[in-house]
Figure 1 (tube, rainbow, N blue to C red):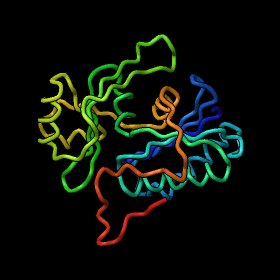
Figure 2: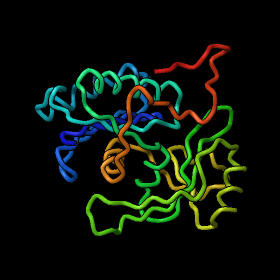
Figure 3: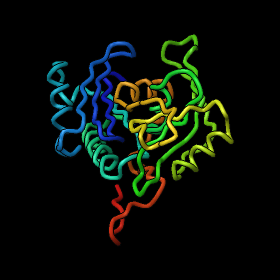
Figure 4: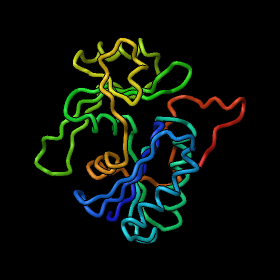
Length: 224
């Protein structure tokens, strides 16, 4: 699996990591700067490869969330890694961007959310436990499945499923009631998750997890 290249771009931030082992990794991140993910993703990958003195041909596996998240950002990330996976003949591992946020938040009960547009949010509920003997093992139990809701509906669902669930996300202001833990998903946590729970995908069967239909003005969403 190593070197393992991981990418995370579900939110406004874009990050890339390279793992030489479970504990030896390098990381680069770009925040909102007026440039799109499509303008930055290959640049960040190239910068990190040069920093690590690696060629892309030396990468042995790739990890990336399949969504949910920004339609455009998720599609850009998956298109990029699909090209690498097919071109290099290396495995592709994927995970939920919401589970990535829950893992980054740490042990406990978490209800991660991401902006979905039109006032809605992508959300789910998880219990996270990293206090396991193996250094890479984690337990992530789903309390409620990924869905798309208005913020007040999200809070009601979280409270109904488990009153200990704490909302967490990169944009706390989306939950006006407060009590939100700010968590920005990143490529390092993607790496931790795909190493702990490797889900290898056949690239011909890869489906983007949008949770809802993209608003494309009558056009059909892209397929891979």
